[in-house]
Image 1 (tube, rainbow, N blue to C red):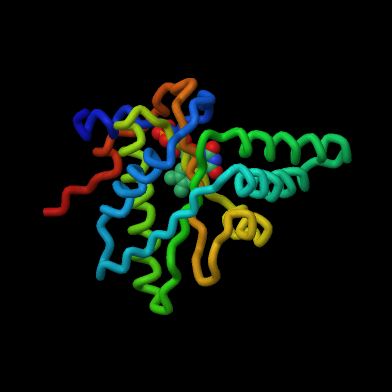
Image 2 (cartoon, protein in one colour; image 1 turned 60 degrees about the vertical axis):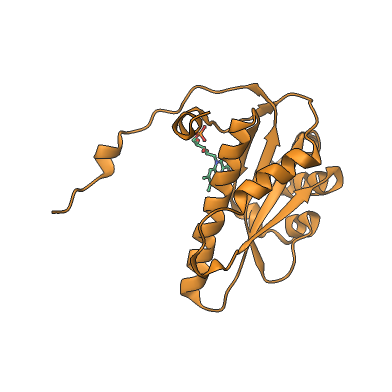
Length: 186
Ligand SMILES: Cc1cc2nc3c(=O)[nH]c(=O)nc-3n(C[C@H](O)[C@H](O)[C@H](O)COP(=O)(O)O)c2cc1C
């Protein structure tokens, strides 16, 4: 598949089939991820392949956060259980962390490089017929979620990625054309 076709056909996939994802497939995606550019060859990415226990623990941490917005106790429990079950049922899930250099300039570059690795992974997945959904947000820094994901000290979690065979592929989201964001400087 041509890379431009892969870029334009990739979507964030929210529904997956039950087909299990092999460790070999995950390894293939990670091998693509680590080819991303990175200044000074810091290789700042750290990947955590989350098994069912880790996914359930993460789902609980996320569910607890979502439940804070709900008043009724039964509804709270239902939210936690639903988020937990949804994460447990994912065919595969990764947490992606980046190392935290003491130098703020390097730290920023390392964050950027790690997102380039994430995009490599998502495009590689699409080319292999797999879907991905990258997510971020406050839960990345939640101590309960970090514990569930097995994150080491001195790393910042910047995304989770659900991986699986797509059960449904959403339509493309409307986007502006590049020329609306582009200035050609003489
Ligand atoms: C840094 C980052 C964080 C994201 N966080 C979330 C998220 O928390 N929840 C979610 O549903 N999607 C999340 N997404 C996916 C975007 O919503 C999605 O990429 C966007 O809607 C465009 O859709 P597409 O990926 O299918 O083109 C995130 C994407 C990025 C790059």
